[in-house]
Length: 198
Image 1 (spheres, rainbow, N blue to C red):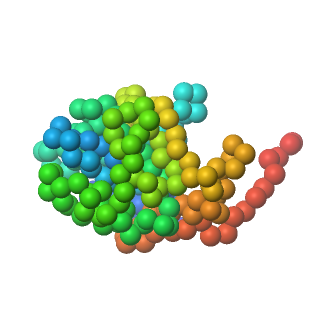
Image 2: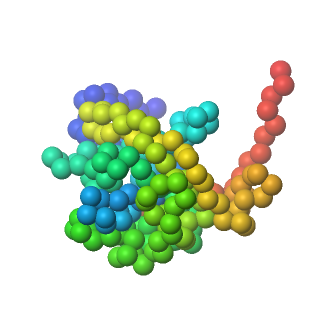
């Protein structure tokens, strides 16, 4: 066993060890709208479910430099955003959206994703996603290296193939997870275990 004093490591080494260890991570593809009405799209793998009552999702957005990331600035300003579950069918476009485009360029247009209107909020989603959640900003928690954005789900959209009798067909969803470096993962082998009764 190799033991490391994490506080003695430089941040880059901490980062590499964390993202290589905490795997697989689900990916949130987030759309938001700028003050100039540009539809922004960006992937985030620091993402998870916070609560089901009320339905809350979290996205951690790292701070980089003085200016906040476009997604964070847009969410804090408009208080609305859409979270998409990333599936295999549009992974290449999601990956391309992580390129540093100028603020006036929409990643949705640049990657040739298809805009689709939301039901309860004024931020468009993308049609290629098999699942998307319309979110209202519940809370933004300022942390030393990131801002933890918590969104309340107010409307959800599911592809007819993946939504079956109130449940999600994981095989047809084909979700993609983030690993380390340039690597992504698929579901692979699924292990089913009964809950222990004693």
